[in-house]
Amino acid sequence: MKKYIVVLLHLSYWFMYLLVISGLLLVLDHTKVHVISPAFFGAVLPAILGFYAFYGILFEKYLANRKLLKFFLFVALLSLVAGAIAEVIVQSLFKVDRSFGTIFFSGLFLSFIALVNGIVGLIMKGFISWYRDIQIKLELTEKNHEMELALIKAQINPHFLFNTINNIDTLIKKDTSAASDYLNKLSDIMRFTLYESKNGKISLAKEVDYIEKYLELQKIRTSNENFVKYETQGDLDAEIEPMLLIPFIENAFKHSENKKVQEAIKIHIKSDKGRLHFECKNAYSNQKNTPQHSGLGNELIRRRLKLLYPNKHTFEISNAGGFYTVMLDINLSDNK
Image (cartoon, rainbow, N blue to C red; front, side):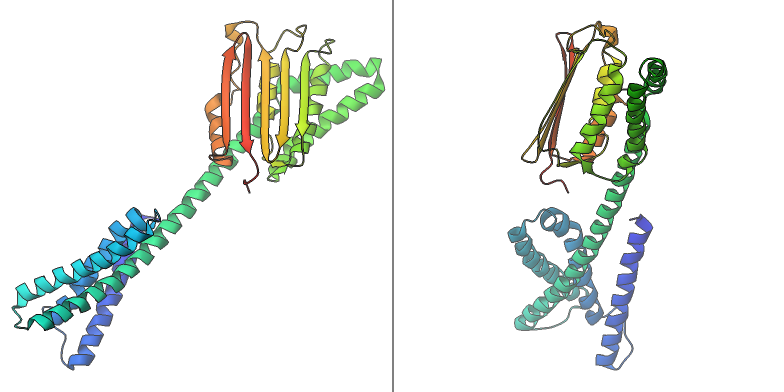
C-alpha cells in the first residue's frame, strides 16, 4: 500500500475520532468545546498513545509472530501505562485538584480509552499488512508467469526444430510410416508447449509423455540405441508445474555431443508418496562444454523453483568425473 494512502487512513481516523469526541463533550457540557481543556486532553492523549503503541509495537513484535501470551500481557501493560502517562500530563498541565481515588479511577478510564484506540490501531495495521501481503503475492505470481513464459519460449530450441524437421524429411524417403510417426510426435510437443503448459498444473504423466516424445525425436540423430538411459518409477498421477523437468533434459542433449558414447545421458524420474525425485546426468568431453542450462541460467531456474515450491524442494548440481548431474527433489503432497 502506498504511503500517502496509509497517511490518509490515519488522518481520516483521527478526524472522525476528534469529531466524535467534540460532539460528545458538547452534548455532555452543553457548552462550546475547548481544545485546551482537561476533558479534551484526557480523551485525546491516551487515544494517541494507545493507538501507536499497539500499531507500532504489539502488532509486528507479538501478534504477527503469534506470541499470544506476551501479546495480551503487553496489551494490558501498555494500556495502563498510556492511561497513567495521560493522567500525569493532564494533572501537570491543568493542576486539577482531585482526590487519590478520583485520580485512580480517572487513570483506569484513560487506560480504557487507550485500549479501545489501540485495538483500532491493531485492526488498521492488520489491514495494511494484509493488503501488503496480497500485493506481494500478486507481484510474485506475475514474476512467476514471466519466468514461465521465458522458460517455455526457451524450450523448443530452433536447432532442435530444424534438425528434427530435416531428419524427418530424410526419413520420408526411406520409411514414410516412421516419418509420419515422428512428425506426429513433433506436433504433440509443439501443442504441449503452446497450450498445455499454460493451463496451470498438469499430471506428471503428461510431462513424462512430453519427455518420451522428445527423446524419440532425439534418437533419430544417432544409431546408438544406448545413448540415453531413461527410467521412470512410481505414481505418475501426481500434479506438477508444466515444463519443470524439460530444461534439464534439453540441456543434457545440448552438451552431450558425442553420440557414440554408451549411456551418455541418464535420466531417472521417481514419484512416490507425494515426493518427486528427478536425476539427470550427461557426459561432456571437455571443460568448455560444461552445461549452463539452455541460456536460462541456474539463477532463473532456482528462482522459479523457489516461487513454485517454497521450502518444499532441494536442487543440487554437481560436476565431477566427466558427468554433469542435476538432482531435484520436490514434496508434492502439500503443494496446492
